[in-house]
Image 1 (cartoon, rainbow, N blue to C red):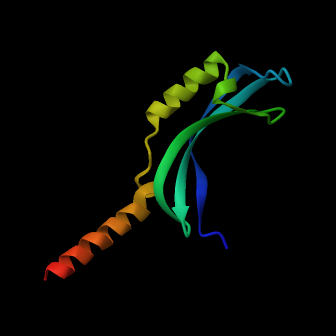
Image 2 (cartoon, one colour; image 1 turned 90 degrees about the vertical axis):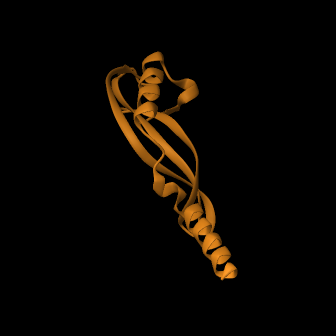
Length: 109
């Protein structure tokens, strides 16, 4: 059983129908933004980063940001501005903070 680790969650996707794939030569693909977060016992503790990836519709080849074309780079920047880090990725940190504050308040009484 895995108690801790890193996980990815899809935040947003944008279609690029006119993008030409370098591998197969077909047109069409998507750019996606993923939130990467650290979890303990499946409870998200804190967000690590947001990453972008692109995939061709035909050959399903995945490209990371360093291999993006200019259009893919522009769309990924726009998507990153539109998407924010979800608050639920910090729920574990908030629970620990609440427990520490309650523990401190109980000791004061």
